[in-house]
Length: 187
Ligand SMILES: Cc1cc2nc3c(=O)[nH]c(=O)nc-3n(C[C@H](O)[C@H](O)[C@H](O)COP(=O)(O)O)c2cc1C
Image (cartoon, rainbow, N blue to C red; front, side, top):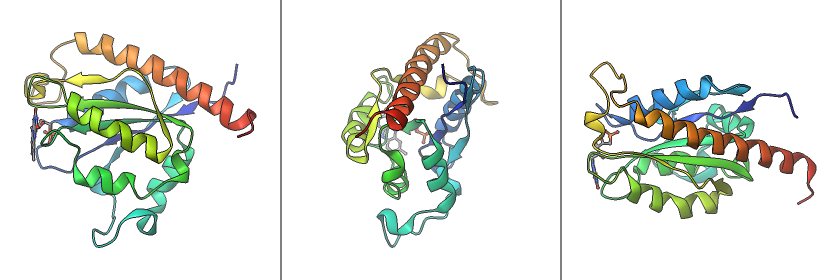
């Protein structure tokens, strides 16, 4: 068994003022840090200095790029905006490409409505595939997220922790398996 820790950062996929997804991203980061041999970071896309008058790898931010390069897996916390993802999240993701290839990704959908961001998750899947990321078959869905946390950001319904744990176990397995493949199996 490979003793090197995995690196699985969490991308907070919106810069909206008052975003509830920040609570979700912090929760995921905390839960990942409790896993044995996994390191993480919370990457807040509102802190990335990407210009908006250009797009793609030409505007790569070296800090974000090196985190994606180091990553073995990714968690994307994606709020649902008109059934889609935030434009800024797509802009940030588009700034890298080779960094993502053959790495695992899990998506956490967040919505005010009752469907837990399931439509944003579905809409992100083809984007993940085009970026070379490998999606896991578990999601976490926060429905009516405004009722899931207290104003201090504490989770009010512990049932979510079981779901998060299942999701992370699968993401960690996929991250470890794909790291083995990247390092040992000729492509
Ligand atoms: C532009 C915009 C569009 C939205 N569209 C949806 C939607 O399609 N379905 C839904 O359940 N909630 C929708 N919401 C509510 C968000 O899901 C809600 O704000 C939730 O808290 C997650 O986003 P947040 O992290 O920005 O708070 C929308 C919010 C905004 C700002």
